[in-house]
Image (cartoon, rainbow, N blue to C red; front, side, top):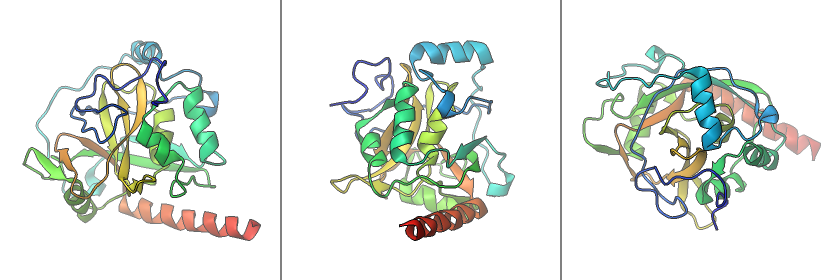
Length: 253
């Protein structure tokens, strides 16, 4: 049963979402400037459609005009889209509870991913700089491209994959998201049935949601879809910190 039933959230406005939000492909991509938002521990019902509308009126967001994609030559040339903080929750359960407290919709697959052993949170509070880039800006000129090809091209240009924790943390730190979507460029996490999933931070038109999307290597993604990456040097640093966190946890056991 969908955990968001009975809430003011949903994905009915997102194209090609199936019941339960399984393996849906999202088409609309819109880029929004960063803003200062409260941390999740202070959040209360920020994800409902009514609160999203209030946030937009407060921040007076103006949608960006559609412009032809400008090819990206290097990750270093892409400005920071938004800086978020990770490592602010003791474990995945408290992170999940914060999403509930904020009224954020969580799709079936996303909820399963948050409960998987492969999904971990950092024990170290760290700021993460995210960069936003579409597959078209990475140089793809076809209507769609495979996830594997998109990741390969991104890594060639100096982009790194984000930790899985980035997606739910971004959901809690991005309450003024316009209608559209952001796919988090992350290593897929498999469900209990072995289905690879990547997480998507979206505004489906009826509230703010965190949903899962097909993370198979051959998954076809519309090239207009916008991904969130980190730069490769930051990805390497995050892996090193995560390794230290795991080592510390073993010591305390």
